[in-house]
Image (cartoon, rainbow, N blue to C red; front, side, top):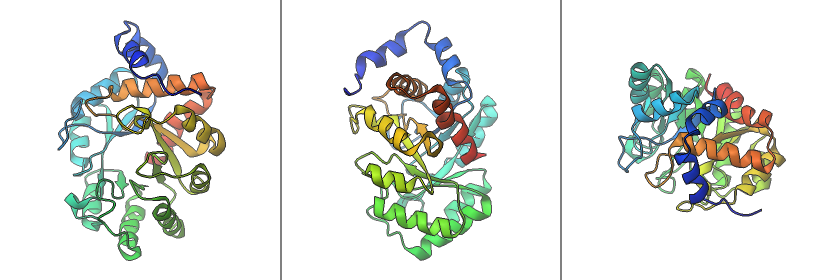
Length: 277
């Protein structure tokens, strides 16, 4: 299976005069649970408002705003009020919010956020202790939040999943397991999927990121099953297409490889709905 072609297909999707109508038909009702928007400390292709309008235009159901440095709960609430589109926020437990800080999680939840990501850009600097993790998980239970594993290693992910399972937490996501920063093997992913959804992000296939062969994502879906997978873009970087275009690229590519429309709908609509709502 060859690697994803990149620029040629990307440009054809962006430039086609039929792109908007095709996207409406293809992405209607879908959710992208992992996008990066401005304002941010890094340059982003779109701000919150622009990303929401893009997704709304093609008939998507919702997007989740992720920042490595601050809670997006308030930003999501404002964007939802401006556009009428469902925008969901969360908080990533990096150093800028105090690491494994229960107060940051609780504040995010009170403001309507839904997702807690464990450390990402500071994952090597923040110690994941069982005591601190339990405090976070108790708030996850109290507010019915989604817990995502961020950039933790497979060994750390298994520790988190074990503790979450002991507290009967079921809304669990293993973020982009194939990326170099996580590096979970297919066997590890199969074990993780017993207790969490595996989030496959299209950004991993991009040349300036992991340049991952999309066939690996197809193989993981085939081995694990669509019922335990979620598709997201993790887009928003200025050197990549918009999240909406990225979602369409991902769906087109996986269907070309043989993933059924039923399984696409399960991973892009049904499973994200179960997690978030």
